[in-house]
Length: 501
Image (cartoon, rainbow, N blue to C red; front, side):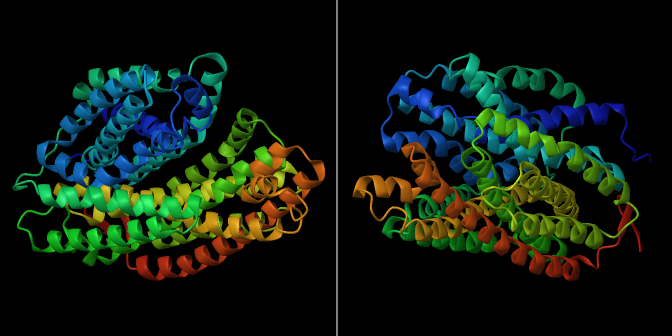
């Protein structure tokens, strides 16, 4: 039987990458749009937060559930249902007359996004049986996710310069219509032959556990560690434990927790979480550095961030060429060492550093994360049985969401603590309200317009930035050792089911 994918499968891959690009882009496309939304709809401070967060919360909370749904009703069917919902919700969001309706539409977008991401990755497992081709396909899929997060601010900035804020949502509609038209023609259908009853209580536990955990993490990062943040974290952990217990005891679980007994699967998920933790945590600083330390406009900073993509593509191409010749443990180790070197470069950034130094560090971060996560996504998919590919890919995506939230909270808190400490003296002689603004964030200090204060704030921020890079370098170096030891038993895969020792 010929297992090599042909033209139809590769065109189908392009169709699968498109919704992934838009789903990841939708996370960041509103970064610059909130002031325009605020002026038009007049949301309260709490509503502003929900406009930004509703999408990510629902997306993370439903990934595991929707992965299991796809395994049961059919992955292509769920993908097309999600595409229709994503397109419809985009139209509602674009023309929302009130903050409440916009929040609801963002929640539906998150729900639809949760159907799209696991379905696309699981379908790659069904379409590409040759190991080398599957690795390439997953690398392209991962690149689509990363590219979406990267160009989201660029697209958002461009649209907001020329159109109204709703245009940031309408760009989703043509892509979803295209997916609905060509998806049935190019994509195969797959469903688990014996999936059993759907675990509705487990789905509820999964949703509430993820939402409360990520809410607690984000609140701790933004509003400091208060009682509500601790309560959300505690409740989320209790519900997560309850979810795991139910999955171990129910006859028809959403998630087969025995997958985690496989060393390759569990190690790959853990390394993926750490990789995303570091990527999101440091990207927060590189973006702010370009805008607030070097003084670039957001759109200009976003364009400069694309300057590193050719180098990233070269690294990805070399990694793909070696995927069938070198053990996975060596390639994953190489990706993590690239990521470690990125943090080492960023440790030397100062407030007056040249642009190339920051871009070099940022480019190495992107390259290291892309190489690592694409390999890990393949390991996670192939370590799980084919009938559980949707659930396995959902676990991978959920781990990424958790890693991103933890990176924002922990690495963000480290930099913020150093910034607050170092700004104590520069703001000591200022009025209380002004001092609070300058000491809270670098953006607040810049908004005050005092050159001496701005320079002090830029230096303090950069010290927090380099301290975070130091933590990242140490963490990734330790994970590199773990990754090599945990994955060194995985041989080189030549074809599906054929291992080359």
